[in-house]
Image (cartoon, rainbow, N blue to C red):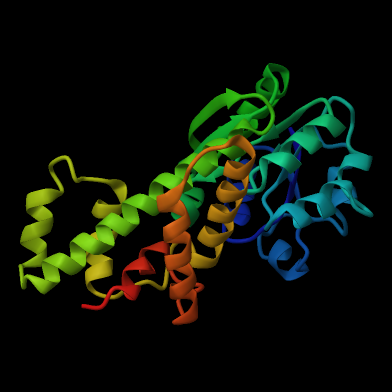
Length: 279
């Protein structure tokens, strides 16, 4: 397939690379041209130029405004896309803009991802998708190049809402893990033995398995940034105002993350949540 990939940051670049390795003809665009050139793939001057003649256009940008700019803005991809081309968005954005883009074109899938940079590099992302059955039929073969799991959860916007579910759950787990770790330290327990004891039972989670040790060593310069987590929680809290959901823990943890930002943790991994709790 001829594929345009717009947004070649820490997530997008490896995803575009997997598409090329799968045999697709990939053209990339990035606002910072050097990042596009670093992929080693063909580089377009504009999103529209990348999308011209493509079978699929994939985006992985920053936020609602960025997504609107590369799709509907001047030199945006939508004006150049063929009617039968599918549009796949991997950005974590609002359900509102996902629905707006689906109204603008027939074949649109909102497809936020989970798995972080490591998942993108390994081609093992989990992707939650919203859109029509026809759009999914065209999009899924593209996404399989970099996904371990692709789930069609519902209509337009449902993928973004499911990503909100993911982030709400992570926020609560990380707060609990932070408190548990600090309790163990205050009790002067052997942290390796504590981990061995509790990680095989009901307390076990991905966050515990992958972050307990690094949190104990105060290592946070990797992973999914606190700034991005706050963006995602903000989207969830805004959506909750619309649908009436009650998110007291997510709202509280969002404020805790604001504290982490003020102490220099804005670009650190989400597990830096533990920093706000004194040892």
